[in-house]
Amino acid sequence: MGLIVQKYGGTSVKDAERVMNVARRITDAYKAGNNVVVAVSAQGDTTDDLIEKAKEINPNASKREMDMLLSTGEQISISLLAMAIEKIGCPVISLTGWQAGVKTDAKYGAARISTIDTERLQAELDKKNIVIVAGFQGINKYDDITTLGRGGSDTSAVALAAALHADVCEIYTDVDGVYTADPRFVKNAYKLDDISYDEMLELASLGANVLHNRSVEMAKKYGVKLSVRSSLNNNEGTYVKEVEQVEKMLVRGVTRDNDVARIALCGVEDTPGKAFSVFRMLAKHGISVDLIIQSIGNGEKKDISFTVTEEDLQPVLDLLEENKAIVKADEVKWTKDVSKVSIVGAGMVNNSGVAATMFEALYDAHININMIATSEIKISVLVDRKDAEAAVVAIHDKFLLK
Ligand code: ADP
Ligand code: ASP
Ligand code: MG
Image (cartoon, rainbow, N blue to C red):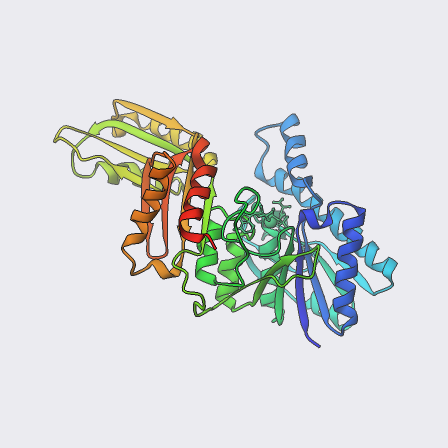
């Protein structure tokens, strides 16, 4: 007898049959004597469809109104799922984010959960109800609905688990767990039995969208035991926890992130403080810069290139234009046809050969590297978008073939 928080993603509830399947899984856990709280996502492609609908009317709609719209997807799922559970004959109640006490900061479209006021949730659990909560949404200090960013229902689930001191948080999705690479295009990728919070956080932040990166950050912070598993079978999933590496794997996963744009400032003055003035200006406007390279100057001119998310590309170009007099570049070039490909593994900290092996894999596959960044547990390279999947496959073959 314990408290379980479960989360079901969009594909797991995409139609009536899948909703009934999920309802059965939930009621099985409940009938086994557990208290069950469930976070659920919008059905199938609902969120994408809603975004399209908005664009038809106003491509520049305010983020507040976008959140009002997008939050409706999850409201459909919670009510349908509750109806399915009613049909099975178990006591159930659905709650929107605000009814469940999920409070966030004011950043529409990418809000962070600040607290969960558990009074209502606890009252429903005391009444022996199964509680179905709308994922991906909360309410801010202005009593407005906010959403947590794409994939944010995972974070709703972990936040509920942390606030309610659940025994475990189970993330149910359309794959059996966390794989060594995206199984959609890396055919010999395989499931990991467990992975540390730090490695999972890097993977999620570098493009492995099987978990929302903030959910991992939060699970680590509050020590929530996370398991990732399929809603379509009973296979053992992947445990995300504080692990001593059992298998001595240098590299645990390979990922790709297409949400990247590269900007090059060509022919800027080779004087002290140039990079400082450019990046201070970007930071002031809340723009996060990821990879950076600067060419060796010749005393007169140098080039500075950096990457940002696709969403930030236009604002950065606008800022550079407005501040032409400070930047003073001969030319500003940009492209979206790039991807970031990364390897992650806590075991690579003291192993100097890893980067060389990764570059060798790319060389063998005739893939050119545009930029490189390394840290203790990851190495990222920027490649042309058309090469990204082949790069992941080549690197996976090099490090992770079983
Ligand atoms: P959900 O709707 O359940 O939240 P998502 O589509 O957000 O599901 O996440 C699951 C998908 O993540 C999988 O179908 C898979 O293609 C993709 N994915 C990317 N990288 C990985 C990985 N390393 N391991 C498992 N799945 C991955
Ligand atoms: N429905 C939201 C999305 O598609 C949240 C989620 O699925 O986690 O991004
Ligand atoms: Mg997801």
